[in-house]
Amino acid sequence: MKVRTLLIGVLTLFMGFSVIAQEQTEFKPSGKATGKVFFNYHYDMTDGEEQESSFEIKRAYLGYNYNIAKGLKASITLDVGKNDGGSDYTAYLKKAQLEWKASSAVKVSLGMISTIQFKEQEKFWGYRYIMKSFNDQYGFGPSADVGIKANFKLSDSFSANAFIINGEGYKKVQDEDGKQKVGASLIYKHKGLIAKAYADVLTTTLADEEGNETDVTSNTFAGFLGYEFSDQFRLGAEYNLLTNATNFSDLEEGKDMIGWSFYSTYTFNKKWEVFGRYDNLSSNKLEGEAEKWNLAKNGSAITTGVQYAPVRGVKMALNYQGYNFKDSNNEDNSLVFVNFEFKF
Image (cartoon, rainbow, N blue to C red; front, side):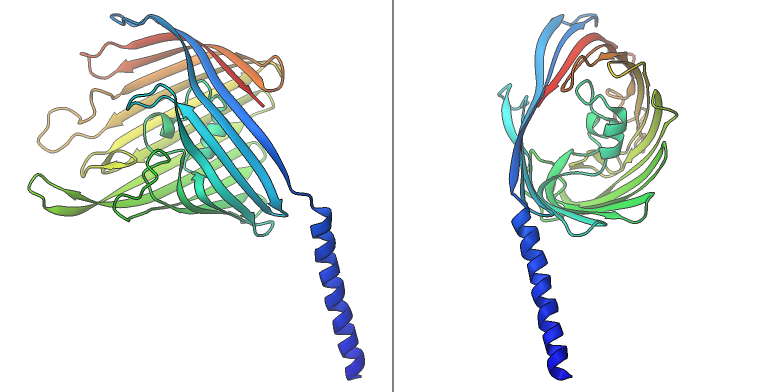
């Protein structure tokens, strides 16, 4: 009896190893190079602007994805864009991550990773080559950072994300004070509906003019709701709040920013669609001050246009972009763009 049990155990173990070996034999490591370019021509109708028109390459992404083993993938992406510190085109490391699909319900990524703050909003908006999504556009959060994140599939409709990152963004890879940003999101998807709630917290040590140090904690909150009424029409809305900071990496106690964004698209067919978007950025008023601290940048933005996609991998859009400042001393912006995206 014992011999038979032992034999069955050995055969079971052998069969298990055979299945694993077969899966490893059948799996073939493979890689793929990727590229994406954002190009535009714009005409500036703002009064007093010296540069009336210009051709621009705003972004060029160069990447490579490699499937190392079943459920294990490595990715690297370079972001070539303008550097405010000097060069017009500087290459930044945008992504350098190892992704492990632990199961059908759990996926873990580490390294220089894409963040989760506005991933769903950006995808639903759909026109990153024309304008960033609200959080990215106005400095509420970075699109990538160094750290680790995990995605969880909770059910057919619910999923969740959690992360720990440095908090300074992908252009500042060093963690300046050794304190990380921690956050999570909960996402609901059912038929044409998508809803998302996001929150994070970051604490840093700041010194005043006399050298006294104090810890300041900043929070970001985001709520997003989108609905695809049919294959032709979708409508999205989001609310965003950043506390105790002038942007995601520069903390300053008492300064808050609030933002709303609404956007929609109507698709005529696979090649033609029209879109529109309205943003509103505001800030709080500090104690003892007559005006809101960010008055010079507070305002509302309107973007509207038509997109044509002649072939897969190429998009182009004629669109208008305007920004109305709350501060009457600032001249409102008014521009016409022709944007292109081409990728492989």
